[in-house]
Amino acid sequence: MYKLLIFDLDNTLIDYSKTERLAIDNVCQKLGIATENNYRLYKDSNRLAREIYPNITHENLSDFRKKRAEIFLQSAGCFDTVTVDCFLALYLAEMGNGIVFDDVIECLERLKGKCTLVIGTNGDNVTRHNKIRSANLTKYFSRVFTSEMLNCSKPQKEFFLKIIEHFPYGPESVLAIGDDLKNDYICAKEAGIDFCFINRNIMELDKNVKPQYVIYSLAELERIVNAN
Image (cartoon, rainbow, N blue to C red; front, side, top):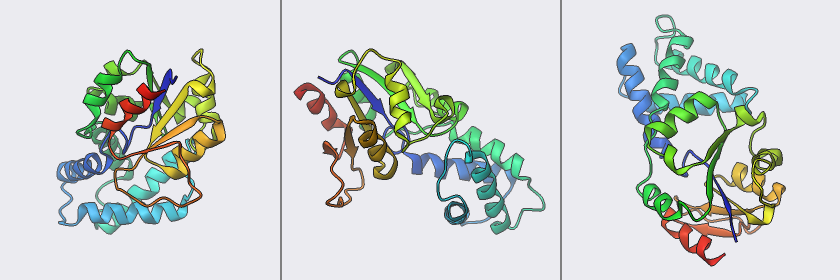
């Protein structure tokens, strides 16, 4: 029986795209960055920054964010009038306002009390905790683990293994839930715990990718927990 559920945060509980789009709109409005294509420019900047930092970890996350902000400000034509630090400060504050998917609260209400619920997410402590509080998710989770806190990032197997160390459960009693096959699935597989892939975008899985469970809504998760 699963006794510990480890939830990813972004794109599992939090609608990252909606949160990000609103954050960019608000930051640009506050800074007076006038362009109709702010979000597209930002996504292009994110892609270019990822070419420079293809493997983002807790060690290089800050450098990646700065490079992304620099590229965006240059693309928006305001690099000489808005500093990278100013943009980042506003951006991180806005990204602390998490927007949950419609299926999240009901799922957590049904699972609360049945097993221990925690969050395991890559990223920094402040932004992640702000996002969880703003989305009114705090009461459902006994602990929140970030890559900054654990000093390692998914897909390193140590990420989940360090979380499990805080609880009196063996790997066979743990289920990780996430949307990312590159990070969440690989991390769970390497750590020897079961993985539930939430396939919100209804993507076709590679034949070599075999999570224990595939669901399309968190409404399906209770059935899995009850069956085990």
